[in-house]
Image (cartoon, rainbow, N blue to C red):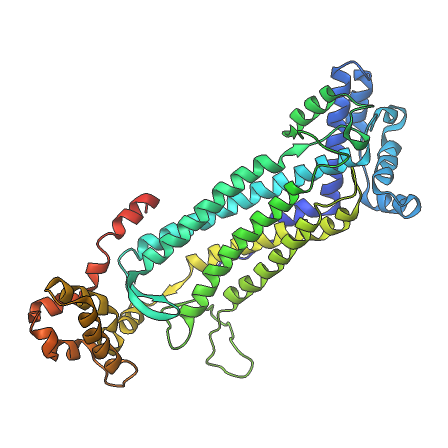
Length: 431
């Protein structure tokens, strides 16, 4: 059964109400820090925590008049809190709230992505175990090369996703940063101790040296890491698409009962999930460009980054989440056809074993140049011929039979010769 993707797990982290909730979390954390340091009455903080609330529709209504989102939010919160509201936002600037709250959203999103990444890791690991010994042809330039196993191909995917897991864990530390340093970041009206206490309450680290904003290299790093991850998903998807081609058909996306592939051609079973993933990766890469361009702000801050981030950050997090879920389901339900792999591997009489024949001849004293010429001649004679048989041509070529016995020739066509060291790769990955 293919699991259905549902939006709320990630999507709810990027709705307006959740954003405003993080703003309120930051404001309350700062109030608590101010109270701990004796700057505002603890009774006022208790009242703020008991009464503070917001209505997203009311915030938008106020913003339509004041043209400032944070002021609109604070105005609405104070409608709930009353007189104690005068202690909210004391000594702060809007970016203290916006950037610190955004860090909370990005961390929460990253935690979800790490969970889904673990699901993908387990799906690939399991499929690699299942096909540890499923022999297939390896390809370079899209052309048959030498034997591998499908499990080995998946081992490469697994290693790549493990690297992404490490990158995202490191990224979590990079992005989990807040700033409560006031206008232009000088702490003129709010001291660093407030920032330290508030950030600790929020599970963040104070930024080392903020301006009025947290520098956007951190956010560009975030988007670029997601672009890298989704580029790998695209690589896997493109591989599935290629292996699903009718003339290859070594793997195939699961085709559900009742699913239709074409409005015109009833026979079609198209790799639509893989194609969808390929397209989505392009969107996230384009957002990585915008994120890098957001780094260059004027002086201590401007807001040219703000409009960009309202689009690219939710997009990147939600799309990456979808792609991880989709790829996990695709891998879990992937149809694998070992008989087609064997058929493709042995086309033209096993031309993919040419190097083994070459090396065997060299080991018997033939020069590499002469051995290459003999083997290439037989391979090209078999190539793209309806009855082409490289094995038969090699077995009857006098230059070969003078050097190799029939048993030695046969041994060159044994695919297990190519697989004997793959266990080391599997062991490194715990497969």
